[in-house]
Structure formats: C-alpha cells, structure tokens
Amino acid sequence: MALRLFCPSHIRHIPFLKAGGTAFLMLKTRSVDIRQTPEAVFAETIERFIDSELRVVTSCWLEPYHHDHAAIVCEHDASSR
Image (cartoon, rainbow, N blue to C red; front, side, top):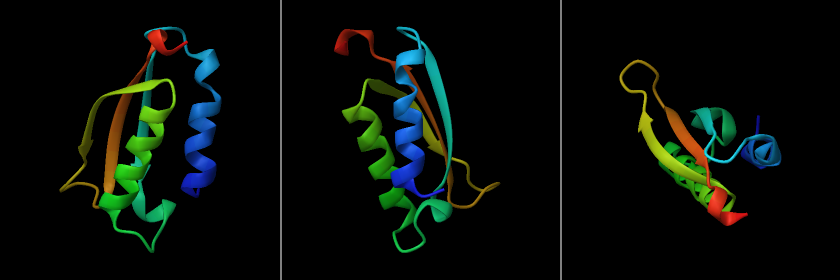
C-alpha cells in the first residue's frame, strides 16, 4: 500500500486511540515506494507520525531477518489535543 494511502489510514484512526494508547506499525519500505531508499521512506513515515498526534516511542530495522522492514511504536500524545 502506498505511503500516501497507508500512513493516513493510521493517522485517520487516532481519534479512536485513547490518550496514552499505543500504536504499532510494521513498515515494508519497498512496498511503500520502490523509487526511494528504505531510509527515506522510514524517515518520511516517522515525520508524518510526529506531525500528527502520535509520539514515536521507539523504532528499529528488522535486519537481518526482514530486509528493508522496520517496526515503529507510537503513543497517542494527549497533550496535543
């Protein structure tokens, strides 16, 4: 699913996530945009979450098991409401 469709679906559901609630995203960077580097897709995704009401708690690459895949854990930032 393209990032322009995928990321907003996560962001669109923020109102249903209670304050302090946790969201998990498993990001397949090559599925988002094959033309960009995986690092660029990862950075853009993190940026979009930070611009929304989500605070990135942790993120990591899933190497060596899943090449170009990342895990992102976010919390709903209640202070931004």
